[in-house]
Image (cartoon, rainbow, N blue to C red):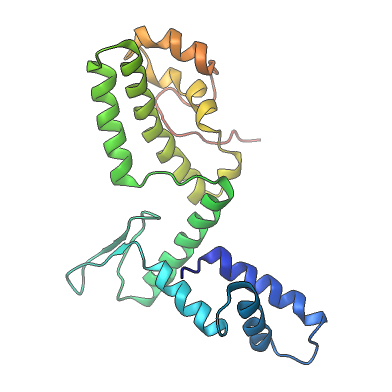
Length: 209
């Protein structure tokens, strides 16, 4: 059984609501009731233990005591033997998970993005047909989009970040003349919005007010 940050957040919310019903119970007792009711566990302690297990599910621990561990889910690198680093990972992981649940989308991590960009460039350049090449270009742009969304999540402006289709309409100035013959089809399918992303950048940022 997996218990995520969003599950723990719901338990805490319910425990607060239960205060009006169980006026004599302390917070810990209300958390136990909420955890049992929502998650089917014995108590909040069990929920917390399962949450900690989920938190480390994607962490690749270093073989060396003083080495750096890497979370392939939230892309955070940290020293797993240091309490402060573990807490920083928890904060990053929770923030990333909450955004992905809300967006119903999990952007690729660094390794996955680099593969998308490399494979996409190869296919966009050497594809056998125009449609193959266009699919390759879109794969490249998906790698850029995921990197931009990662930055938006950790910059806490992900709620304003454009969807992939809108991003494709915005990013075309950055492509320049690299795929000139594919641009008419790209614009026909996705539109064209200039001035939204700096021509030398592939990351979208909200405009200052």
